[in-house]
Image (tube, rainbow over all chains, first blue to last red; front, side, top):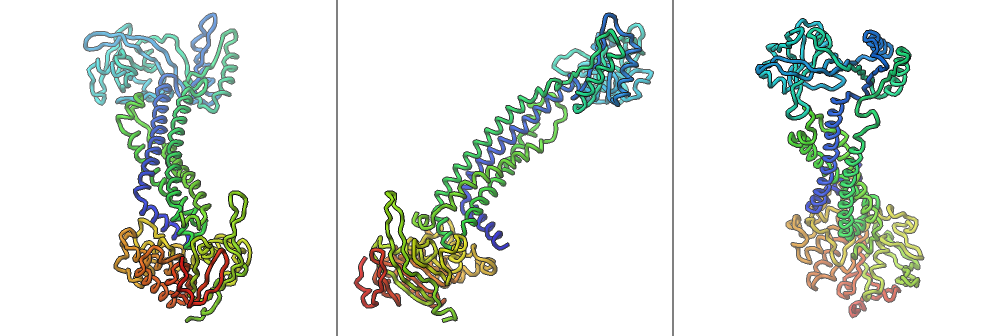
Length: 393
Length: 242
């Protein structure tokens, strides 16, 4: 026990005495760790941003799209029955019809044609719909007498940005004029995007909005996607002989992770930064040991064992780099979580993920590893010092 | 004198030490050394520069082991002790005083004296500050405890080095040219201090010097010439020149 405490006391004394030199060495390590952790953190944030954007467009991993085509259009009722049956048989809980069409909406300046997406409630989950305000459709919204609509920001601006808590309405003129209630607003995907809206299939039927080219999507989860795709393909083909029936993955990861190259580049840059930090630290440590050869010899003459010298030099390095690593990680968190950085790195996100814990742990772990490596080599040099030569050094 | 008086601390019998040169030739530094150091002894070893004095001191302090012959430290054969065992034995039993003081830079006089106590255990470690202050007080430097070595005079630095060598109450004090870097007057006061403290603690003092005045303070004197150690009658010590 005394031996351990006295080693700590000795390491602390060394840190105190050589504070300027150690501070300079630590500054390099802290900057390296900050750079490493920031690169990984920013990479992770960018990846999350790209992933969310991709999932908004193509659906979550893994989303299957079911299609039946042939010489004639398959009977709608039979197709719907087949979709429902597949959901039940394979225990799929999240699905949606998706159909793009256009409809006229009454704005203060007149009737404007708007892109309308006819969906089911599950669309919000599958496509990670995030709302600027209000809410997405609920299960019983299909039963409303005045159909609910979720509108885009451009739509919301053109209608005069009414307060959603007052249940504002919009008129849908046409063959079956109806009044719809605006329940939510989604952000525009790009600047100057024309107004658009989402409406549930029941609401669309009520207002005479006719779907075109409907597709059916199911969220099945990544692990079972492969097996389910094959099974559903066979199932669907059996129900529609003579037709070309297929289930395809539509999400961004359908053909492997397209973000993997980004991750690889980020990892490579991080590794390079770490290597530079390690080399810098090793260099300083080696110079330090050469500078301390005489001192090591004197300590040996007072009874310091080679193990004690090794642990002392090593501990000094590890303790110092651990502290530097902690400081570096804190700097990285401050940089990556800065609102300006977040908005530039992941403009597609409205809510930013927490700082990736793996990046923080990697930064701290890298610092300790660098400390151990940069400490071990000089420590080995230190124990090989010949006492007699060292004292005369 | 305590009960350890006259106990043999180090015994060398037919000890040789040679080193292999780059041209594969052996350089014989010490040949056939016979020496016994007992508690309370004050021995001086004189000789010209390069005659092997420091090599002999390194052997006595377990910093080195002989090429041949027998070296026993407190009855234990040195060659059978591992590096760590020798280090521990050295730390607890031997105190070194170097010619160039070898104070650790950047540390105060007190921190320098504390350093050997960092390798001690129990009370010696936990009360290291008090023990070191007492020792500095004994060498008359209590008031300079927090002074850095570069702010001390040569004599003061050597007194700090003596306090550091004696702080673990070693049974064997090895002084390598302790006055070599000091003027005559300061050297005499340093030697007087070393002799007094060694006598008070019943420690054996082995001084290596080429200064005959320093050698004359010892109670036994040897001459080392070309690696061969021979006793020197005390009256003849004056007149041996470096």
